[in-house]
Length: 235
Image 1 (tube, rainbow, N blue to C red):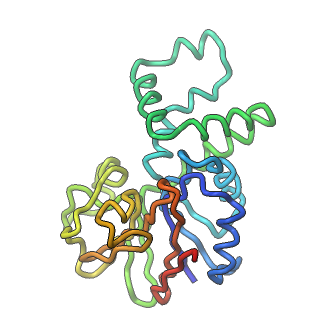
Image 2 (image 1 turned 120 degrees about the horizontal axis):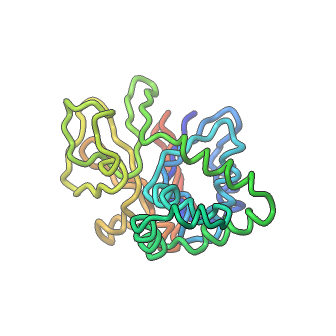
């Protein structure tokens, strides 16, 4: 079975593992996490540590992980040489990241640095290797898994021709149309943004499904099982 979730934003690991178990997820299943594992909540680094150890879990890059990679100099050894390498663009990006809830992530990485710097580098390598999208076919149905949707969409355009920002920062409108023969699954935009009637549940659009149920607003994540399209929620 293939499960998908998104935008965990530092959700408590113990609660997430309990949710997986209650939803029937086992070591024989596979989980895709559509980015934004970190920031805002306190447990993002703990979630990432867990994910790096799971052979049946794959993270898709989110814009908050993109922020982290651009600001990874924060976790370098403090030397004159490293300080000289810091650019104004990095400082600007770091300020932007901090305004978007980076504080718990930065604190978590600094705690890991004191414990074992190799743990930090291992997580950063894991994020660097994360893809911008995945395509899967389940029971004859095709899916495109991505963090935020597909900006500047053209059904004839190959996925590899999209810009990174098209994958990470898009906010599709309710009337957006994607493929006729595939379903794009994404997060990034909490479903409550689309209206109170969509709060705490997935939205099924024209060729797409948004599964960000608002953990960044102290809500709970959801799971979507692609084999039977069953949706799981925390009661």
